[in-house]
Image (cartoon, rainbow, N blue to C red):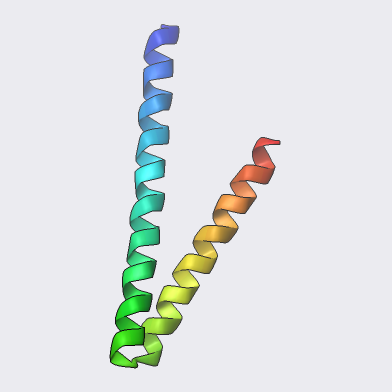
Length: 65
């Protein structure tokens, strides 16, 4: 029973890490696209995504301690 629970936790952590990586990639791509094409809305969306991701990672880190 413990092995199954550990496997589920590892799977969940893996999915969360990949979602964070996908969000970071999306934010960076949107930011770079906005900078290249001089589109303010894309720059703002990219900055907001990256800031929110950084805040979420900081909050999760402080909750673990």
